[in-house]
Image (tube, rainbow, N blue to C red):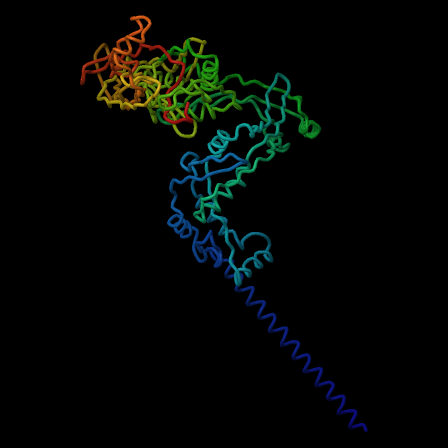
Length: 592
């Protein structure tokens, strides 16, 4: 009996030992697996390559470094000009990628791909990496564009549905800061729309128009922390910084001292206020202002040019005033490049511009911003006489009469710009004065920059216009009526001539301009005329019989130019100002 009990006890002990061994073995195996998994994940995580299973569209980026992935994407999604259609309700319109600078953001796409499995805590990162064992992670390649141009394009077609967002404004008063909160608007969420466009781009499918959603857009809110930091500052004098031979003006800073706690409280209490409100502040003005420093370098008019717009409509005059206001007082430091479109901004009704006459091809039509080109052309001539460097300038498709032939500069927001560079050693300043009749641009700088400059324009060729005949059954077959007068196209070369003591020291090509011909439209009668005998019998009075004479051929010389023999130099005095029409000539129907 005792032996049996001892045997049972021994078996129980052995079983427990076996269980312990099994448990220890299992734990060891699991631990080993975990250690192996951790080691594997640690190895994977230490890699400088994109994880296997990550795709950009249909392109696998797994196992590639950032540089390698970028190159693969560039080869796959080579940027090219394409167009797509957008649709809102019953309005469908076309947008060209080149007009909004749309392109693939390869760097951002690769960064997003690389970040997968590397964000979050270690457990999330491990989870994301393990998912790639059985599935793929696909990201949409990012497209980028100039959002200002994109919004402008949309506004051209959906202006009646779009209400611009107004962001907050902060003004410095005598003893306070004057705050005006922003106001919401209605418009397109550009990020959402760009995501839709990106997906269509990756598929290469732009057959169907992309739906546009108009939604409420909120203005930027004032961040109290940023506000307190920005408006707790010491006054700083304006000064000059010299870099080699160039001098740059650094603007002054107005000192502001506020109570941070009070400012935060006022901002919070007025975050939904539609009216302006104030935050008490101690304002300290600098001893040396920007204007004082400017005066040292911009005290002399080095060039001036004036054009006439006295016969313009009130809307066109207002457009000229608005554009002039945005340029007046501009300081351009050495080496800086001026962009007309950047300075003036979008020409829309929301920004205050009016509908005025513009030329679309050879026709006068109504368009937003008519008159803007007179500002750019007047500025162009003043800049040439100031001997600044022209970076980009384009002539109109047809001559304008407010400046001599070959000396105009057309602009159209988003497509055609006028740019020039300050090539002087010191800053230059621009004064733009529209007085309701004349537009004057003065360029200020140092006296030593004044030069004796003239512009010579040479007509180098003509392009004959075509005649389009339109049959008219109400006119007799021997009658012709010119409904739209044609004019020949003209090619010109403009030269900048610099003189010293009355002698020419340089004559350089300034620009080449090409103006397109305008077709002549003629109505041609098709109705049969009765014989002279029948006509005489039916006539109540002999004077009713009128002899039809041949129409005089229109002039082959475009309006606004003098007729000169072929190959004869056409020289315009730079001080001349021709009469000014009530319209600008534009290259595209959306131009100004």
